[in-house]
Length: 162
Image (cartoon, rainbow, N blue to C red; front, side, top):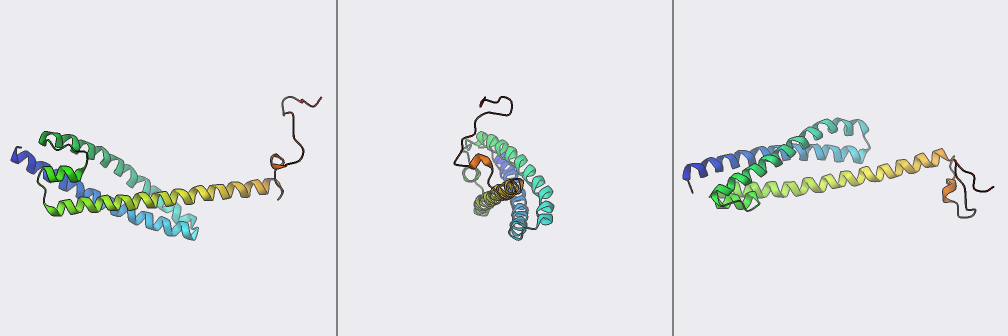
């Protein structure tokens, strides 16, 4: 392994991890604000988090591409094992960088879980809103498609009862 190339790679890996830590912290802050806004049903606050959250997600996608490129570059050191932690060990990174990579992994799990919570809340809200609109549309009565008595035949284009 060329020592200069390995040192350059370790520097690139350290820079990548620093940017990832910063981005994850930003996303975690946004997710916490959004979580509080969802709990309070504060529509204005939810809308305020939308644009920065989308921008951060786009940057995270770009970092995923960069991570893939780093892993491809690690192949020159026979270290393309699929994870940054394994690559860091193979190229001789210090223990501090290993710990930072592990913290990024744990933070990623937290972000993923918080994202799922937001998704579930949004889906449940959508279902409740749809039920409310349905109730309003039928003046508080169940729509005829849910009646258990008379079977409706025919359609709007062709009357099959004749």
